[in-house]
Image (cartoon, rainbow over all chains, first blue to last red; front, side):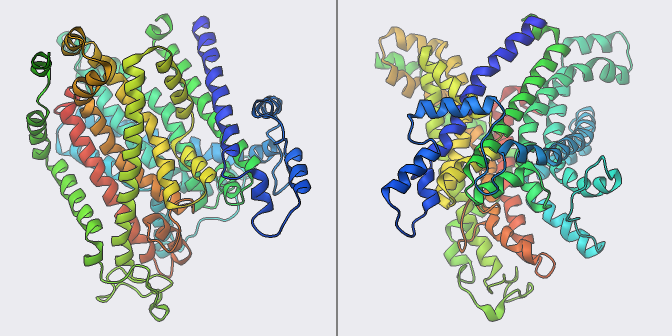
Amino acid sequence: MRRYVVVRIVSVLPTLLGVSFAVFLMVRLIPGTVVDQIIGTEGTYSAETVRSLRAFFGLDAPLHVQYGRWLWSALHGDLGTSWRTGLPVLQMILARLQVTAELTLGAMVVAMLIGVPLGILSARRENTALDHVVRVTSLFSLSIPVFWQATMLILAGSLWLNWAPPVDFVSPLAHPARNFGIMALPSLVLGTAAAAVFMRMTRSSLLEVMSQDFVRTARAKGLSERSVVWGHAFKNSLIPLITIAGIQVGYLLGGAVVTEEVFTLPGVGRLLLGAVVQRDYPLVQGTILFIAALFMLSNLVVDLLYAVIDPRIRRG
Amino acid sequence: MDEVAAAHEPAPVAGWRVALRPTLRNRLVLFGAILVLALVTLAVFARAIAPYDPTEMKVADALRAPSWAHPFGTDRFGRDVLSRTIYGSRIAFGVAISSIGMALAVGTVLGLIGGYFGGWADVAIGRVMDIWFSFPTLILAIAIAAMLGPGLDNAVLAIAGVYAPLFSRVARGSVIAERAKDHVVAALGLGAGAPRIILRHVLPNIAAPLIVQASVSLAYAILTEASLSYLGLGTQPPDPSWGTMLNEGRTYLETAPWMSIFPGLAIMLAVLAFNLCGDGLRSVLDPQLRGR
């Protein structure tokens, strides 16, 4: 097991390095250079000004040297300084991480609480009216854009309940009840689309396990349907669900950008959007690298969990 | 050699007819197909169907509620929301088809090269794809759009860039499975070159999973375009993209909710239509899912 963990962690490092290089290149590939973006198209600037700006941003060095410097700083926790605020990028991200983490976790809980039981119900009533209703509902849920669902819920709240989403965010540690009031609806909105994925995967995974020989044996020895499903089939059908949970973290982190925008939540997603609009490239670069690293970390945790649950993986 | 090779070639047309028959018998898939057809017809004949010019401003008619003259109401500039929603389907389908077409072409070529030739090319392509898959989809699309700048063409490139690795993975896996089959081994033994084997023996046989992937990806491409436009990174005003229309409607949510309701419904219907078709095709073409 320990060997598997070490091998898996080491295997992530080249990809992480590649991700960092891709993020580094991203800003360098912007049409024109960063200096052109700052100077803009209006007014004239001497060659000396351009040269000094290039030197200031380290753009006068060869690409590999620039990457080396940038990576070295990133490894020391320095993701650069925001051009707009002058604050360290990492500090800005960490200040907003709580909101995004809470939203992503909340949405994941919603997705699992809705998706897994519906998937089990659908599988156990395969090809009945209930199964069809659940499957069609899940397809609808997958087809509704998060931002539209959020907009419609806000509209319904304002029309019928005279309710508007709160503007100020409060920490769950300081005001748990108020925080719940702020985060419940965004988590529900973001979680429902992911719930459809969980429902579909639970259903197909459970149906596949239910058709295997050991389930037939369990039935043949006279076990009740309840203990066949819960004692034998369900546990085995959980394994693909864990993989899906890992993939869904990526979806939720992306969806968090839109959800935070609709509900004006001060999270990492809105930080990224603001940085993109304001062309604050160090902040764009740092935020994307941070989100990608977070996604890779969650996939790594999922892979390790997979090995804990399924002995075949760590032995294979 | 040609006769022998031809004897091993599949008859794709008849196979497709046989495969499509049960797909269309499924009522949900049929509904999806009809919906796709209806929406595509709207997009193609938008000029004839839309009652007004989608960009024509009539400030005197601003923020009118739905009526016989304007069934979906008007927006803040007095533009007809129905006409804009109809024209919006052009942008949605145009972006989805061109971006997924590009992703399909690039991804399939990369997957064919990696899967067929193996070796360092496969390793190199695989590593780059691993890196690409490390970014959440929407974040990657935002990153590419941020890099290229907002706009319709750049949104197409961003979406193509996001989905190409998916097609590469699907193609690679299918090519590896197909390469080991007798008809490919026979063609190799008869001295056929790599281009001929890839084009005549491998590609037609890996088309099914790629088509299923394309159908599902079209749905997600429409959603991604709408999300980018909603965030201000895709289609730019005054072009009537559904995402842009929803973004414009935010400010008037309480006074003119129709500005937000109809474009959102249009997105949902379009995505649902492709999801239904993709689901149906998958259940027919994937033997493990048949009947589920």
